[in-house]
Length: 320
View 1 (cartoon, helix red, strand yellow):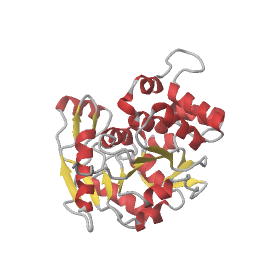
View 2 (cartoon, helix red, strand yellow):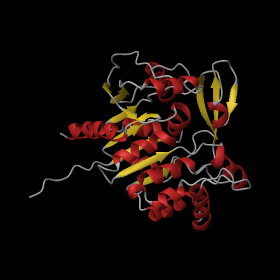
View 3 (cartoon, rainbow, N blue to C red):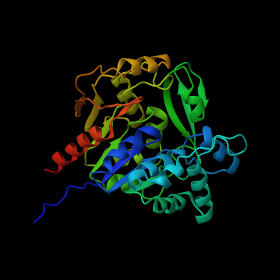
């Protein structure tokens, strides 16, 4: 008789490239994945569609759908195709246009995502954090207030506090249930304020995370970002969460201690990006896991397999 395969129900929270990397790894271990994705992007193709058609930004949603697609086949590659010729389509990705059209055809953004998920035959589910059209507002350390995700990421002063306008938008259907009914929650990797904390600002998210009696795992970024997290150390990341949540909610923190190839590190230095310095040895109530997580490619990103194995081990150990 075969042993029961361990396939935990995992809810991930984030946006952008970081969450896509995580999903590519986790989908090999369990089909029961839910990705809660930020919808505050106002730049690039997503920003254009948002401004011109009044739709929610599809870019991060698209990336997560592609990451969860089976073997990332030709259809998935088509979704990532970006028009480069001059004209009205310049800069748009096919997937963004497809999601926008499907949302119009089905009558709602969440149903558009659901139907697109079937087209791509994804493993798991992708949910927008909210279906409300929201704008990020950040109060900076120099006293200025900046509106819009793209402007926040370009601000030179540190983010002191992040808010949404309108405040506390309702969570999209299934979002809070995904937090309450899973076996483990993973937050990150991703842009600290504009991909991670932004998701915590929707109504009901923080109470759900605080009361969830299951492993809550934070995957810290490997590198700082030029403006958003300039010179941030691990303690700065954790302080930002605590400021917006009110307390430490993490059961585990996964951090990279692997080295980055010199040539790659120099290229990042020219963009004012440096490894996040690990300046604390422990954090009350939380286990810090230090591992070599670097994917040895041209970009400094988490290795999806290394990261997923650690997360699966945490969840398996907790089940015992």
